[in-house]
Amino acid sequence: MRVSEETMTFLSHLSELRSRIWRILAVFLASMGGGLYLSPKVLRYLKSVPPGSEMTWNVFSPWDGIRMYMTIAVVISLTVSLPFILYQLWGFVKMGLHPEERSAALRYVPYSVICFLTGLAFGYFVVFPMSFAFTSKITHSMHLVETYGVAQYFGFMCNIVIPLAAAFELPVVVMFLTKIGVLTPKGLRKMRRYAYLVLVVVASLISPPELISHLMVFIPLVLLYEISVLLSRAVYGRKKSAALADAA
Image (tube, rainbow, N blue to C red; front, side):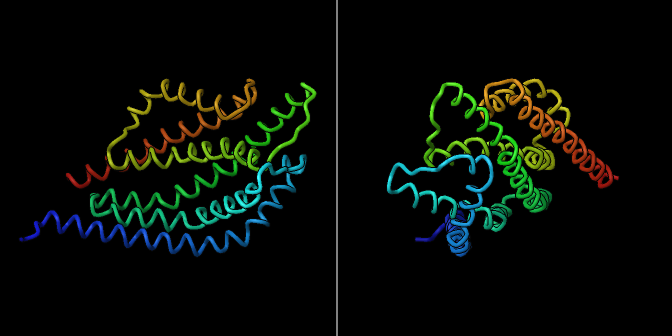
């Protein structure tokens, strides 16, 4: 029984995917060792800076300490191995892309990492302290005693920081989609009112329920969108110029 060419192609892609997954796991586990070593140091640092230094962290389960130890180690490992993971993903999908799309995808990998780390920093150092101060103010006004579990503290922090880090990927995503022809500056301008509505919802979900906090989150998100429009215009202009040059 002869194996069809489509089956052989599928099996080769499957084999390549398995190989790249093993590489990713190897790098992740290697960096996990560093994460396990750094995890207590990171936890002590977070405990020494506001708002962590302003409270006593408690554990409400025998597993809470181990859970936080491993969670921080995994986050460190993912952060360190993220560029390699993105490169491996690009290597797997590049065969299905046109040469221009391959070049764009590879070029934007480091930018996506930088934007993600910038979003993490903005979320942790700006929005998270502001949100925690607001919730603490409400707690004190109700004459309640702040007794926080370390797992609940980090859960609250991640619910704020991770969405903002993802939102900071918007310029890179828009540039890539413009490069491959999915988006255009004109389309982004037409979508502006709907995009602003989505950004208002996002800002209200990840910031304290008061106007100043909403504005402190909403304004950077709007700036990200407008920067995305400008970058899309630049990418579209270069793409159009290159097409005219090729035609000539």
